[in-house]
Length: 148
Image (cartoon, rainbow, N blue to C red):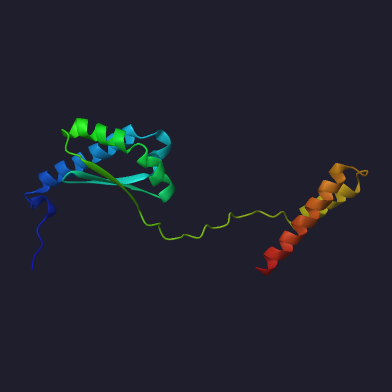
């Protein structure tokens, strides 16, 4: 069995035209909706006389429903009045990705000791208390980092 080169297929221009029309409709939807909703409008599908708009969550779907009439009118003016119904669907959530913790740079033991000695040289004040608290916190973080 041999595979044909993708460029040898005869219906590629039809696919490209369909993709361009799809992009235009999505752009019309974005222009007819508020800017704050743009990042949440993910995709759309035009099927006969129905337009499905896909959003990221139910909250944004309920917000977008308020603009369905203006979206329908905007799409119909450019699409010669073919849309009778707009449906707004929520896409399933993407798989949860654990956020990596930022790499924290904990000062060396010498620098922690320097902060502590600088605090000891000061008179009683908020600065002295803050530096002592900082040195003890850094000391604890250094100890925890050594164990993990």
